[in-house]
Image: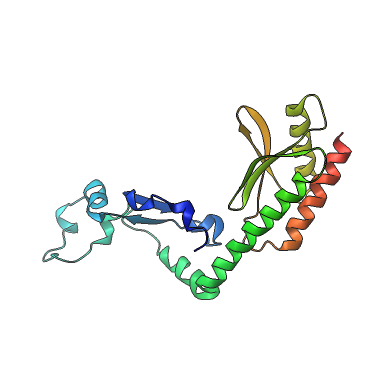
Length: 195
């Protein structure tokens, strides 16, 4: 509930699609979609050969018209088991932890000499760079490679306003506060060795 402000304006959307296999720990593949008007999707995806027509279907939802494949796995069961096993409050607590840990890590890096937070945490994702060299791009690419070659954590890069930056996200379903604290140790240790 405390992150609902990030959804401001969602009530004006025609559809919302999310992938629970990314952050909620559902097994791949599992996507949810919410539709203002499901008839729009049905009109888009419907195929009505004679053998698929549902006679007397008034008021009956024909879910075969809600996605492209007609023969598909029961993906919703994955999500049901996930919610049943962890509960909504358990999943909320995991997300809260990831957000808090990412914010804490960003604050620690920002307070560490030579580090710059380029984009502040948005939920559990932020970007940073190390400022200890004249050629920031080459230096940060080398630092990223050292971090990933080290094997204790894995990070990726992106570009913000054309500049190469390093991305951090606390998002692994089984991540712990200790894992994120270790990320700080790895990043700062290898940054120092990278100078």
